[in-house]
Image (cartoon, one colour):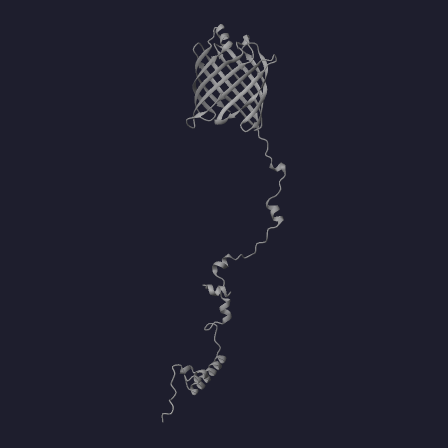
Length: 325
């Protein structure tokens, strides 16, 4: 008769609930049928449980750690990212105690810190040469032997020269040295002169070491029993052109406190010698050399030499070998 419209079939009719029916989305009959279908489905589930293979349980889902843990899941504690899981220590580290520190840094006795005393022995022929001068030719030597440690050492030194088959000068020294600073030693000992003139023994005192720019320096004073004093200054330097070729400049000065006619020496600056020796180190222990040396006397020493028929100055060519063992 047109007083009412038939219920509109909703697209959600298959899932009609009482709430949908109240809003006119479906008919009450459809809602009643949907409710019966839901009850039947629940009953069927009760009689036919799902297997874990087809429908895994919720507990199993949480037991199995996902291979890809999303940040949201990690924030809720559902999983641990793999990178974080690798950084978690398997065993906690115990706090460091005083006993652990003592075991790592033990207190050593003084005796344990001391090294055994070392003794070094060396024999060096700094000069072993033949020379040819203006009026004569001859041989000369300068050698030393030492033994001891880095602080205390004992030295035996000798130097001299020969010409025309006889010994012109010869001396021997016994020294003791003690290191007092870096590169510097204090020296004390005795010296015995064999030639020229009558033999004599004197006390020796001085310093030796390496000055700045690697100059080897020696300054010694010799004091005799009669009060005469002789000072001898030496300086030498190694100029290396290569690892084996070395040029060695040398300067020696000798001063006396009084005249000594028997030894042809006068007071003041009596003698000076300057030389250049070029050596080639075949090995560090053996080095032949060639060189030139100039010697000059001053003051009364020069007059003593002239009165004895000797030259006051002389230039010599030298050839020799330097070695040590």
